[in-house]
Image 1 (cartoon, rainbow, N blue to C red):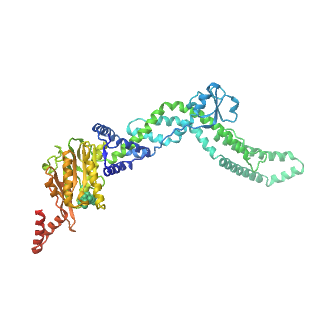
Image 2: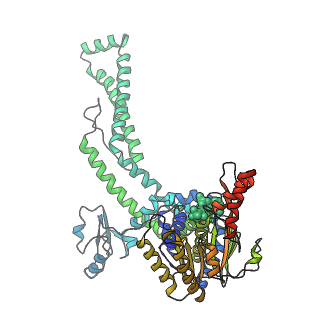
Length: 576
Ligand SMILES: Nc1ncnc2c1ncn2[C@@H]1O[C@H](COP(=O)(O)OP(=O)(O)OP(=O)(O)O)[C@@H](O)[C@H]1O
């Protein structure tokens, strides 16, 4: 059963949730937060506590860097246009249902398909299963997410749970070569153009050298041979060069063939200089290469998949577990220094609670309802297990902040999380109410709305904690005493717990003998006459208001006639 929260308590829950959420590294982890919504059931709270106690120590900030590298690996069913599946008439239906590629019973239809698969021996033999018909659909997402797999391997090492990722990575290495060649295919034009340029430079060099060898004596001989009509020698001479050029071309083609893994004949032999590559040859080469790489990739993928298929369910689990680790790490960082509250009956107590959103807060200890034995806070001897508490004291003393802190501790406890306190005792509630002071909303409208909400809070049965911040601000003090007095009597009769911030402590105390009145007070004034506040409420003692404190301070500082006047004013306060 979910813990019921009124809108302002819910806002505090949301801000806590946000604190955890902003510490998550992976977007897919936030749904886990839904499993930690505040609940009333003590069993569920204890179950969550046990889970966190066991698992929080297992995660550390060194995980964060690896978590950041994780991307979801999505295996998508896709229709592959590069293959056809030739099957028996009877199998056609079920083969089509797989929805992976074109299916036919006629082997002639396979014309033009780079990959021809068949259950009948008309191509590469397959069974009618996706892993054999389209193994790339499993393998490509893995190949593209090797980074994720590497991170999983590291996380496995760090958390002491061996990952299957290293074995998958090892198997994927078999694809390395074909993937390299696929990359070359992308830059085929540049690759060829580069080689062409290089080749022409080499030929040019050769020709230059050749022209040099013709200089001098040789040139004379050459001319005399020419005159004598002795062409053969001349051709032989040229033939030598031609042979050398052809060698260069062959060499270049051989190198290309090696890197592409396919025999290529690209350069035209008719025109030896400059060597050119006809564009249609590049196109043909591309087509041939594509076809061959498709088949190769298919075969390799199938082989790799056969090897790693049994590991995939574990991989899926690991990818889910990563979100759990992400969540645990976020919770661990957010709740660093917090403690798990002890389940308690009859109220709430905590020692040295620290407000979540005040920087360097003064720790505050507080108790509402039954006082636990371990609650050994100075001054708490006066506490008589009061379930109704009126919190009084100086302006800006921290009364609202204390109500917020109580709400934070309650919400965290009901989420199953540790709370920002040295020690805490919390009773599971059915409902938690936090009514903030409405600063701007004066007048009958605001008064009516607030009154209606309070009455609604008191209406039903159950375990309730009701926190109210200065109700009298929206009505007259006299009326407020009557209204609050009566409502608190009802709360008391129903066994609800209430903390109400009020400046009417003195009057309310008379009305409500069962209630405890606590006070937040100033320790004194600083040199600028600002109050130095002790945020720790004094149990069972009405807090002096700010004006009273200022009068007191002046009475102490001044001398003579002035002092007498201040002292008289101060006495008026004391007689109240
Ligand atoms: N435990 C604390 N440690 C440090 N600063 C605190 C603490 N509690 C409250 N403060 C700071 O004191 C200021 C006043 O707090 P808060 O509004 O809770 O006082 P208040 O008693 O409700 O005042 P008011 O009577 O005006 O409503 C805030 O700036 C708050 O951050």
